[in-house]
Image (cartoon, rainbow, N blue to C red; front, top):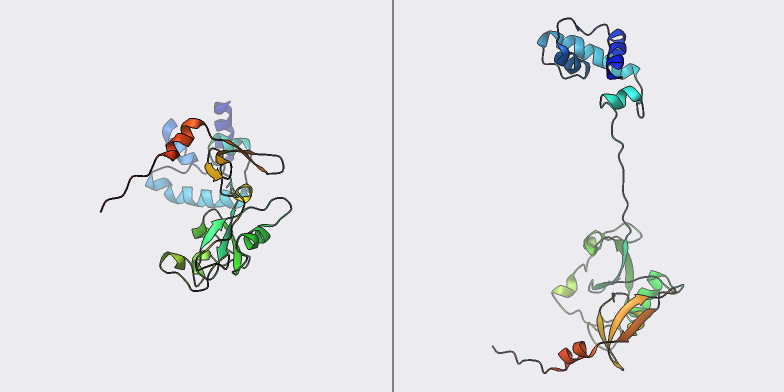
Length: 219
């Protein structure tokens, strides 16, 4: 099948000097890879005419056979995470919309005493708000790392404080995490159909590790 195709292309391209080239040079000239200076001008004009006359050859047999088909660009979109940002000092944490509540509402419930904004992106460095402004471009980005801002609190009980939330409403918990509840240590399981968090008592071996007295740090 390849030989038959080559014969057809020779008849279609009479301007190519096949008689002066061997089998290997023939395919080099045919595919635009000839190093013969005598054929440079002829090859250039022939390729220009071909590029003008031949439209998009996507899916064409001859283009696929000789590797002339341009690969299609595939763009893979990644789902974005939502970050609740406290604007007074730039502190942020991930937040999810569930149980009919939007991410903005959940953000406000976690931090009711301060102004908050939702930023979305694969990471906080690349997250942006609804106006397209990056988190890193806001005036107080990462300010909390360097100082405590007066009256900047989520719960209103002190500078830097966060509002108290139930364990079941913590969006940062993942399967296998260990949390302390009124009933003792619990292990986080999978979430149910309504995204409710499932907790189970931690094994005795795990609880025993946390009953040990912490070692005193020495300077």
